[in-house]
Each structure stands twice: as structure tokens, then as C-alpha cells.
Amino acid sequence: KREIEFISIILILFLNGNKKTIISLAFSKDEKYLASGGLDSMVYIWDLKNQTLIKTFKVQGQIALLSFKDDNEIYVFNGHVQSGDKTLELYDILTGTEIKHNYNYFMGYYFDRFPLTISVHNNYLASNDSWDDFAVFDVDSVKWTYNYDTLPIFSLAFSNDEKYLATGLIEPLIKIWDFKNKQVAAQYDYNPYYKIPDTYVTGEDSIFPPIKAITFSPDGRFVAGGNDDGSVIIWNNTLNNVDDNSSVKNAFEIYPNPANMVFRLRFSTVKASKFQISIFDYLGNKVYSKNGYSTEGLNENTINVNSLPSGYYIVRLQKCGTVETTPLLILK
Image (cartoon, rainbow, N blue to C red; front, side, top):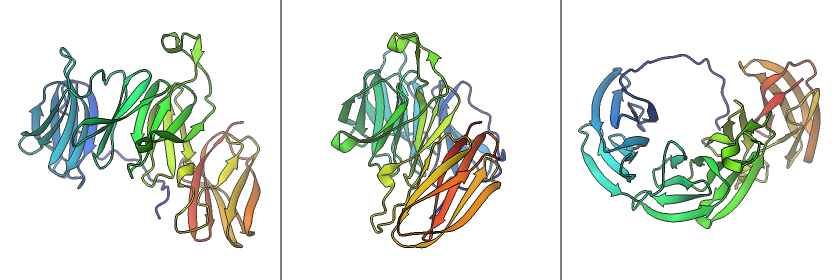
């Protein structure tokens, strides 16, 4: 099982070709190509190995989203500024030829104001077409299949298994939707650092910073969100706490988080076993380690972090042959 890894971040390539603002980027599934597009209505296809621009082609409208269907075909979602029409088109990247055209099914969508996302296997597309509702479309038929009334939404993301859709809201919480059954499967809140002036949405003097970006981890165990106050929040996704083939609970709980001097770490095991608790700073340095023996059932450990400075950390728990991680914020 893959865990969070700490790596050095190095700029490996700089590509220069787009004439106006870039709105969307997409890697091909074999990672051979990178596509870019935006306000100039042009799709740019880059050969990453040779670091060359191999193809450009124009579409009818500003580009809001790109997604590779396979290594040589790409979906382009674009909007026509004057007419307001929106289309989802499929192109051959090597020739720039349009393969499929679905016209004007996305009435009311403005990509500069509302979020848009497509699922990893290109089966579903979600768009927020007004402040108070969003819709999920079947990409193949581009038929409107699911519609929801909700609070104002600022971000959308599908889980990799295409079972759930995460939404970042105007309130300090996110919702995880079982969109096929039209119900909220989970919701998670957070404590933002401050409120921001914003009278055009609520009519109030200030609101909590909304979640402007949201994503699932590849295995769905975590959901990450970023907001206007510059912070990134990562939640354990309780929908994925239990492995269908085991009675061992995968996720563990830490509280309080943010922590000041101490926090408590709680986890469950189905049998007594060794465990190790480790804390890493944002550079990947191990700054704390504790070994112990767990008992069957619920276990709780108090961790003293009084010597650690304020900042973001990763807490890692190793037990019963598994490795689990969760973020920790220390505030002094």
C-alpha cells in the first residue's frame, strides 16, 4: 500500500507557448503528452520527452477543461463568450480533428465563476451552474442525470472510483455526495483562521473563507481542500475507514487538532500488537517517535509536542502490518 512520501521538489521542465491565460492542463494516461488550453481558444499538445510543441488546434470558445480519454484523444469543454453556448468535444490530438461534438447541454455555466470537474475515467462531468445548485452529466451522452440543491459551491471533485463527489461550500465545511443516490454520505468541518469581507454572497459583513479547491487522494482515504485564507486542510475520509476484507479500522484519530502542547492519538486493533507513532515535519524530517504495544480494542496515547514549533506536520501510525498517516497542525 502506498503511503505519503516526502520528496524534493525540482523544476524539471518549462514550456512556453500559450498566448493567453491557461485555464486547464492535462497529462495523457501514458504521461507522454501534456495538453494546455485557456482563454485563447487553442489546445496545445506537448511531447514531454522531447520537450517540443507537436500540435496546436483551435476550438470554438474559451477552454474551461481538458481531459484525455486515451493517449491520443482528448475531451475539450469550452464556452462561447458571445452566444453563451457550451460544448463538450472530443479531438484527435495528433491531427486536431474533431471526433465527437455535444452541443449546448450546459446552459448557465460560466467557468470564470463556477467550478467544473470531470471524473478520472471520463464517465461523469459535474458543473455548478448557479449559486445554489449543481448537476452531474453522463459524458458519453451528455445527458443531465443528477441535480442537487445546496449551499453555494466553490469547488468540485470526483473520487477515483467515481462513487462520490466532494463539494467545497460557502460554510466552513465540505460535503461528500453519493451522487448516484442523491444523498450526502459524509461532511467534514474545519476552523478557519479568520473571516473575510464578503457582502455580495450572503449580505453579511463577513463570511468564513470558502473552500476554493478540493481533491481526493488516489485511494480515497483523504480529502484535501484549500481556501481563501491560504490554508490547506486535509481530512480523514470516514467513508474509507473500514477495509471490506478486514475488521481492522484503517484510520486513526488525533485530537485536538490544531494542538498546542499535547494531543491524543486514538486507534483500534482486533488483537494485541506492536505499534510505532512517528511525527514528520514538512521537510520529511522525523521529529518524534514512540514505540509501544497495543491491546485488543480501543487504544489511546498522549503525545507531548511542547518542544515542537508551530507548523504543519504528518503523524504516522504503524500497526498490524499497516501504515497510516494524518496531518497535524501545531499552534503556539
